[in-house]
Length: 155
Image (cartoon, rainbow, N blue to C red):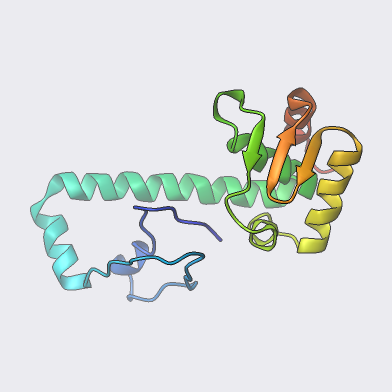
């Protein structure tokens, strides 16, 4: 569903419910994880308003991200979702990017399968929007990529 980067948190909502989370997590790389027991963590939140506010802010960002993901899965096709993702990797209009995850993981995050992602990358390459070399991508036509990212499904 999501990739959590270094220093990120996940499964906070389980603290406020029955302690169960409706998904599982696995690391993509070697990682050090920190587990905070429910009772002690709730006590910390009660005694430190700044931590509580920061946690609420994090949960709000997660909720917005999740709502956007649902919207994109509902209204955007794979090329549009891929274009939006690639643009998110280009702060400041950078044109050369390296995918931070495997193509199979990216396909999963975009709500598709590896074969469809490969076909989409090949099509964008054929249309001279991207140049693909393994996990390294060169954006050849940023404007057309942006147009594709804004496109909704037909019908």
